[in-house]
Length: 224
Image (tube, rainbow, N blue to C red; front, side, top):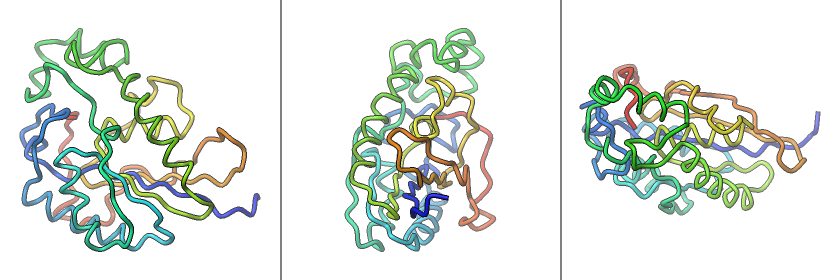
């Protein structure tokens, strides 16, 4: 036992957007939340506002993330800044297209992307490029996070998995094997060790317990 009070990082995926309902690759598009998504955002804010020692809130600067964090910004007493490094994966020519259609019509390109060998859509980002910008944001966030403090990040599905992979010490590309995370769901990581570079412990993944039952169900889609 170290006797240290862990630092905590709570990663939240944005609430349901119009693109989620349609099963689209959203990437860095500007689609906003549905009515159901707004209700999810309100429930998420209530859960996160109760976080002890909440020291920082950051979010992607995309519309669906900003709309998700808006209720929390009204409740919490800490500032919340939009950060482009927490944007979703740039999916290139796949943006706006149905996920199922891409998988059916471009199986080889889709498989190469999913395995971390090629950029999304042929001209978007690779998983490695996404992880590099998320890594930069994480280094900055951790540097300002004191022992026992909690930081919240509101981001997107692929960016969230990249962050979990980075903090948990997974090799580049292994985050592709992590399960999906539902809209307005949480992943919680803790770090008690003092050694630089020590991996964070994942204490919750795809946690939707704060959502009412009618807002909790998640379609099994791989949309970004």
